[in-house]
Image 1: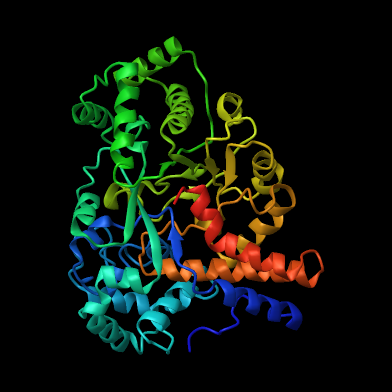
Image 2 (image 1 turned 180 degrees about the horizontal axis):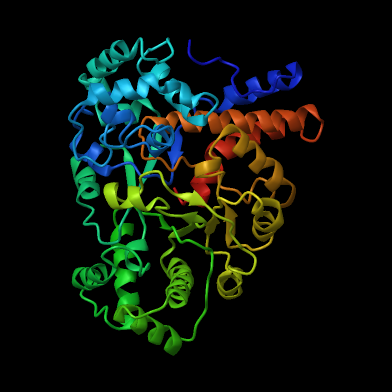
Length: 463
């Protein structure tokens, strides 16, 4: 077997025994995946995944980012290509460099998929690359490995994709019309029409106006257009919005000031400070809209996007060259929280790529403001160590019930059950330690394990 049955559990025998018991109670619970970047078209069309390289390498920036760091050409991996023309070649490159993933969460996720889904029990390498390719490729051509079958086999209850406000959502509508009972919903990601530096921003604003029948050349028309777009998403099951700003800065400008700022943004003459201020104002405006329409608001700040200019220009956005940066939350969120932080009917979920903020800023904020909840360890910290650091630093101030379970935030479909399994094991390991240290009773730990796995995420995301 590729994976040990006690992986990620405590090495101390008594705590390990408790962790096993806790995990047994949550191992088979349905998966709630409230935030991710899989494609609704996979399930709407329900066509076979073309080949192992297209399934495991092309969509997974964790994979090709590591390979690129060791000098592997993204051209050779066919990253950014609409169709992988030489999938076996790409797979051989991946397999021959599989050692690069030793000790990483990617290795856990990949081995889980290889073992649990495809029955592979031998570590991937250059020697067995073709054999593994053939096993996976053959199974992908069977009905049991069609996207919908894999969704059901993975015990997914809800899966949320992330879509632009300009997206027609045809695939989501097709899923509704198909009669398939699975719950796949969109999340509203307005970045293309709130970030003035986003490629095609002006065209996006104009298109938003055309779609909604609003005059997006004026501030009120622009806000009304966003409200209408959110309601269109909500009609197809959307329960959340997602905001990927560079900072957590918020603002609360007077209406005339906001309208003037918007005019400067549309003119294309705004300076960098005005662009940041506009994004800050739009976080507050979206919080206001969430209070109106009930959508949960997620703030994902702190990533310097597309840091590698060469990769961005040659291969486009989201190609593994995003880098974390320090993030201020206490001062940055204060304008928004002064306006809406005390609202019991508003949920704002905060994420961070800056672990130094956990105990200093985020846990105290979430441990006080009714509107705030803490998202799980995310992206660069979606790892066993990152999850454990999160629980250790957050629980002492925010407790468990101001957190929202786990989300996988992945583009790689088959990593979803693997990632959730890792999260369940780590939470059980943390709870087992508290029981072993007599800081928690075992019946409480069993209740908490269920909440951290299933209950809190359903409640927080209104699922």
